[in-house]
Image 1 (spheres, one colour):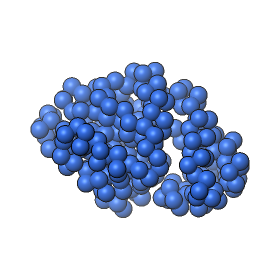
Image 2 (tube, rainbow, N blue to C red):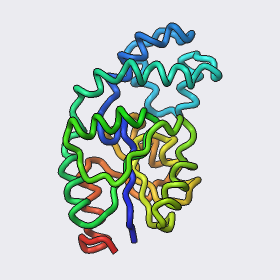
Image 3 (cartoon, rainbow, N blue to C red):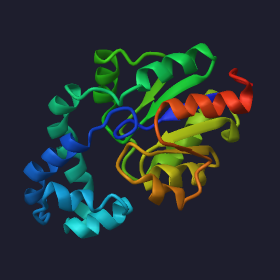
Image 4 (cartoon, one colour):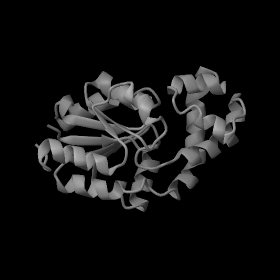
Length: 215
């Protein structure tokens, strides 16, 4: 069934939306972004990240630089942001059941590792960062190859359209979460393998399908 469960970081393990908004307000104008209120940005939750880029008015060639500046700006606030409620307990149970756990993120790898250590989110076999906004499918294929597991035995859990798209392109299974950036209704349009309203749902679904143990 499944050997490995790979988690996105921002929006999946940690609710970093407020921190990201604050960073955008401070950094965005330097890159030609239009001024947005918090409410206006929340209205973009149903959009693909490419559509969001067009909406805020940043030139496409400047997006990688903007992303790097925002990550640096977010670091301090991110460290003080608690994990998604209940996710720590879910990770502990998954590790006890024998699943191999991984984090894969476009965020900086050292920031992800520091956050996991600070908030006692343990049990991860690998932490992969700095993937870039649109390179996660390649990273997922390399992960499956490097861990010597069949792609269909890998589940990627994410909160954005690009997460589910990356899973589809890599041939791995996908789980869409309802507590992150994109709405679960929008993510459902992409037909993920699993849809999760709360972290505990992942345990319930896996227990129903496998009898509680990895197979």
